[in-house]
Length: 110
Image (cartoon, rainbow, N blue to C red):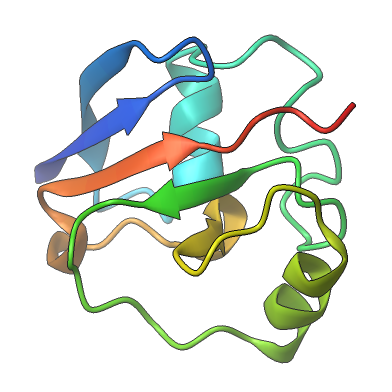
């Protein structure tokens, strides 16, 4: 079992450095939920299917990330508060390549 470190800035602007396991097939949205860094019911509403953008985050570090799927691109094209560095947390699977990743959770859509 190997964990990586990820820095997550929550919607209140508080920074959290968390351990994320690489051997459980988790994604970033599930890590945020497991550490309760967003109120219940405000992140991962669609269950990680790239259908709601509630897990949108801004990637702050310069990690090489996997290409966006068509579904992720389509969802971000309709989401609010999208920036050039926006990604859906549910589409970022936890791998050793993401060690040291820094992300900020996008504001909740009102």
